[in-house]
Image 1: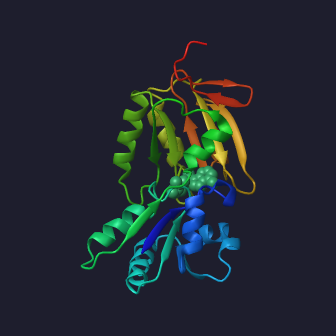
Image 2 (image 1 turned 45 degrees about the horizontal axis):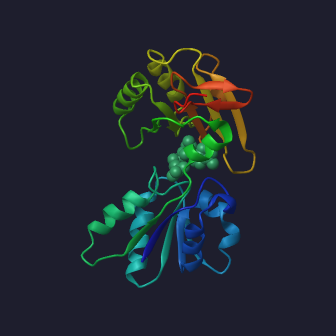
Image 3 (image 1 turned 120 degrees about the vertical axis):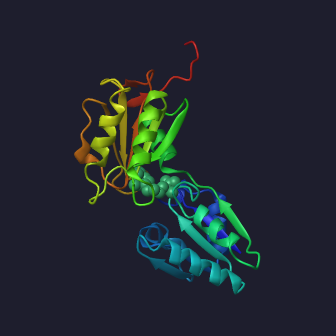
Length: 241
Ligand code: SAH
């Protein structure tokens, strides 16, 4: 049996009880080393298989092979395993197997939701997730989604906003959205939500500082009615108050 577990954004406090239980019940834990480190204290006496980034397919294939031997495997992703995590890949691979493999997907608190709590209530209305990573998605597709999401006035949560290899993606993304997002649109930036060194910045589309954003940052761009009050970012649901 394979449990694909979303461990939440940081430590044990933001993990669901179901996720904790799945990890406790597992014989072997499989995951990217940064995530393994986040839950280190839960892994005493457990077999752990960790590796680096961009080895996802091999890691998941191995997890399936181990599950076939009858062991309980927990494949961990940060946040939610079904949001840019391992759930899809595990299920895709499992469908190719001749013998049925039992897979259970255990949801977790994704980075946008963790960041939203820290920022106040920025995603109270219709919103979307867009990843700026073009490792698996062509940049043209990302550009199109940014433009149309901005035009539709969604609150936009950006995952993978800026890495060493893709330093200018975030600025490019803002330039595309600028056609539809006014300069005073609130923007919330949360670095390392729920982890050591958590940091929050609230600014506007025009005062955005791209340099503060890195790979463990969530960027939340408001819609036309989002406003800033003190250190909160608030998107009205539409109630008369
Ligand atoms: N499955 C994860 C997302 C993986 S994609 C989830 O559901 O959260 C990786 C991206 O998620 C990072 O580049 C960053 O944009 C965001 N992210 C993950 N953890 C974060 C955290 N603790 N704080 C802020 N952003 C985070």
